[in-house]
Image (tube, rainbow, N blue to C red):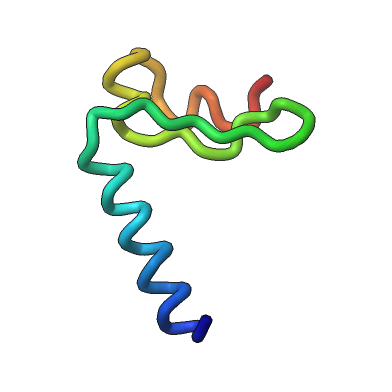
Length: 55
């Protein structure tokens, strides 16, 4: 896959996460939060800054 296509795919993925009312969180293998989308902020009441890098 070309770098341009990878970048476009990543941008589209992030745009979809930003507009959907679907709570999405991602953790690493140790359980540390690596991604917390805007819908998660709205639905759970925590900001991304509050939860990033937390267990």
